[in-house]
Amino acid sequence: MKDKFKDFSFRRLKITDYNEFKNLFYSCFKKKISYEFFKWRYFSNKSSFCYGVFQSSKLIANVGMISIKLSNKSNNVIYSRHSSMVLKKYRGLGIFSKLLEKVRKKISKKTSFVLMWPNKSNYASFGINKKKIINRKYYIYKTCLSAKLSGNTKNYSMDKFIQYKKFIQNDNSLFLKNFDYFKKRYLSYQRNEYILNKFVYKDLSSFFILKRNKDKSGVNHVILDHFGSKKIYAKHFSDLITNFNKLIFLSKTKMNNSTYEMIDYINLKIGFIKKLNINEKKIFLKNKEIFLGDTDIFITIRNL
Image (cartoon, rainbow, N blue to C red; front, top):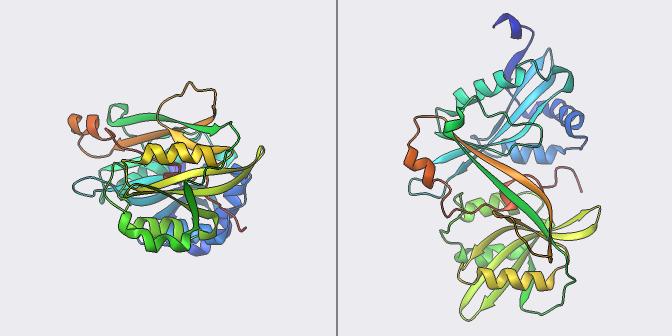
């Protein structure tokens, strides 16, 4: 087995490996990725990292790991897998599986869980037994009706976020979303891309974080995250549909509604690296929510 990989070196990427990362990313996804994104996503804290496979000095495979705290009593750390890629000519040789095996050993010293967002062609799962994996499918929808401005919500730049941080509270998100989380996710990188949408009902306040997005169908808005009162969440969501054309959002169930168009789906897999508690598996995602902001789907990866 050692002879099989003798021409390859496996190591953690450095910030100076950006050009190799950029080239591999473009070869795999035909998208340009900026130095600013690379630095922000994988080098903004000591826990997150990229691990790659090199042949000589050329990066031929990579997996990125993001450290996040779970929203549970212990605030356990979970690692989320991103930027999984292998140069086409090296696929099917077992290189990526070997890479994940090495990464699993490293993160198992810090966590019992790994979160994966498999793309349509990559379902690699760190060699974790299927019985120790939770699988969920989520659906991405876009509204079809034209907006009728009602004036019940107000939009602010993300510079106003700090003024409303007192409304951040423990909720049913899968991840611990405290002030530090929101600050890092939405204020420290490309903050001008995001909109803070505020809704007030009686003495309650609710906030959605939106992103102005452009695709083949034109300009739309994406619901990335939420904080504030859950009691008026549904009212706020309904008002957003009234106020925004082509609003994109995530649903954990399929919807039979002519006003919504399903445009895609995403897979979520959570693997238990260490000893599995069956009851823990059953309740892990119970009443927990994820948002599109938890993935990299709508993050800008290049310079504007």
